[in-house]
Length: 541
Image 1 (cartoon, rainbow, N blue to C red):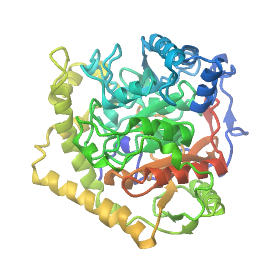
Image 2 (cartoon, rainbow, N blue to C red):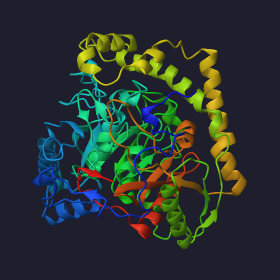
Image 3 (spheres, helix red, strand yellow):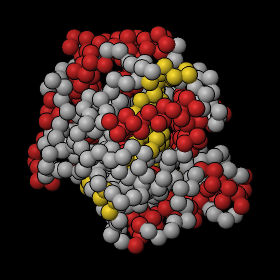
């Protein structure tokens, strides 16, 4: 039996959760309860739904500056994250953000912008290291106060591009790999992150804070990380675009790891174009991450060149039908398939990914082994000031601080990982080989070869479930596993609403196919334009 894993977003479960609503129901209607969270949620916001291009135009015209943009977002965080709806999407703000903004404004005046991200705020998930005045803790008290000696590859690339690292976003503690009974979006340091469409609904994990902050317009852009579902699940639940790149396209050095064969950072944004801009700034060979060597010759620094509103024309897309989703999700997806066909794509329906049932157990086995090995390597390099230097010490810290660290759920996954041996164990090597065989050659590659496909499309997930600290998460279906286990890319884009809750469609395909997937996703987005800002309702249904 496969253990329940919060970071996956329920790849094999479906049908449970909130009562079904009419497919295609918009984010307003008689099923909603208007928010009484307070005035801040309803006050017009100058940067509401602002894109990178909008902000650049504002700075170019002199109407905005990097400082004024940063101040507006910091004020928005103050009003909505700890007050009003209390989203709890941000763990800590960057105390140097305004100083950095001033420097970038001066540079723009003296020598012009560095590129499209010059002066643009970005929030980073709190497992992405920054060598500044912010900490990097994966949401855990065990790493409270931890500041790495060196920027992560992601943070370094963002600084080079002229972006402003605005804040650290909340997450599911330890990237949702602590307990089978966890509540996604909860960390001890950040509390329970909330879904801005309905505050009693779960944001999904583990990049919950990144998704909530972008959806609620607390930042222009955010970075999340995914092992299995942790970028695409929060994105679908909160009505944004999430890009899970090919593993190795973005360097992972300086990120608190889960498992090196599946971990990747990825953009979480409101538009496909903004995702393409952000992705291009993050690529390149990372000298501290050997897996990025394979990206040499496969990465781009400008993915916007592939965006085409007519990009569906002539594409061959396979429809994956064998993921278990509720009838209303399937009905909404059928509308999306019709829109794709209207855009000029050839539809092969069904085109199911084979052998999905052959790597569930082996995936979890690989993750347990790699989590222990990778986390130990990360913690060993933190230096003498850190509280913990091994997974065993994390477990011990949690036991000694049980009242604070484990008020709702335990650490059974951490304990199971600690019991694993080295990465030379036959059990690990066999499980990894099984994963790659059935998710790649006899999985995604097989169905794409058989039907000569450009990509596969599928619902990303079902509607957000109710947050429940007693019983943990409730699955409503997910399709993240094939792309996650294979290490192949996937992009989710909003495709509509069910009972006021957003639902996304995923485009996934072969390794290094980001240019094609972005082209397809952009064309779908432009043809449908389903993104609508949240209203911070107390509940729906």
